[in-house]
Amino acid sequence: MKLTRREFLQGCSYAIAALAGARLTNIAYAAPDDPADTLVVVFLRGGWDALNVVPPLMGDDRGWYEKARPSVKIADRKLINLNDAFGLHPALSPLHELYQDGKMGIVHAVGLNYDTRSHFDAMEFIELGTPGSKATTSGWITRHLQTAPGGSSGLLPAVAAPSQPTALLGTTATVSMSSPGDLSQWDNGLLSEQQSALRKLYRGDSLLHQSGLRTLDATAAIAPLNEQEYNPQNGASYREDELGTQLKTVAQLIKMQAGLRVATVDFGGWDTHEDQNYDEGGYMGGLLESLGQNLANFYRDLDSGYTDKLSVVVLSEFGRRLTQNDSNGTDHGYGSVMLALGGGINGGQVHGSWPGLANEQLYDRADLAVTTDYRQVLGELLINRLKNPNLETIFPGYGAGFSPLGLFK
Image 1 (cartoon, rainbow, N blue to C red):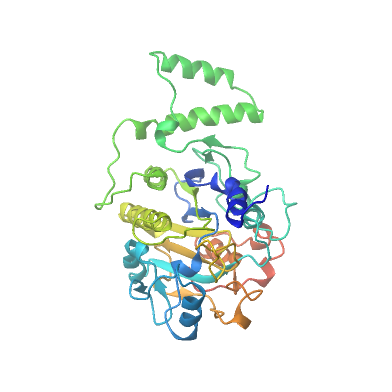
Image 2: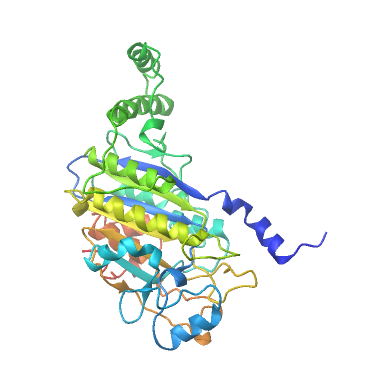
């Protein structure tokens, strides 16, 4: 049987399509008085189209952009002006106020310094923190938790839903949870007796015993969140979708003031090989609306004493090709865009070095080039906001070449 290009790409996309939707993948706690920020990592699985999220506005680059994307470009009249050079997709308009207030910064032409157009290779390289090598036995966040001055011991060391991301490979203390209601014990009228019996059962020093007791402690800690309806603050209103549910859960956990150190959230569905529609009501427009509205409401909800110690980073495994394909979509590319939000952000700026979109400026004459290694962004975050200077351990082979972008205060 002869496959059309569309059928072939559909078949190749089945696995990545399974990553669609949003999932709270992991959280880790530290001591309540830890001076470091709470880190929230939102990973956009599928490779989002950075050139339509933050398109060029002026000059030759705008011309190259419009010529390469006759049917999937974003009209300049619809874009929100960030500065003279770039615009923001209108579906992300809820984030523009944070940008103007200096609470959100953007890094353009950012990504891996290793050439791969495989979703799974790129995601693994980024989360392991070792581009080009899969032999690493722990993820970059795990190594951060292992070397951070405050450690990662605490009330609820790690929570995953539905599975632990590679960034936390090597973390053994994991409890599954995607919302507070998921982490509860069935009460048949004998709940107290059940918990007492389970605590006796899990007495011991083995990893199994420790994991069992940690789960019981986590259940007890989360129980108050299930006893009353959660009311976001400052007029925040999360969307009733998966991403909204996950970010609302993270907000509740932060407000517990139990020393939340790390939360990772997956938001999939960004693999746009065909029918790439960013307009209102379109598939990609809907994803961006969810991202923009939920992130803005997450920040608003926590903007009552929590955002000064909050750092949110949004990243994807790579961007998309400059030129649209024959299916009105875009194929796997190279350079991408990262967003950073928080009280310690030097926001209101597009950081990084813009390479340009002329043929000779493109990577492999096809893709937006990478001029900022993603580890440069995370490295500055680690040092300035997470109080962890151990870059050589967290990103082996990279620490010696680090220099700050000026994104994080």
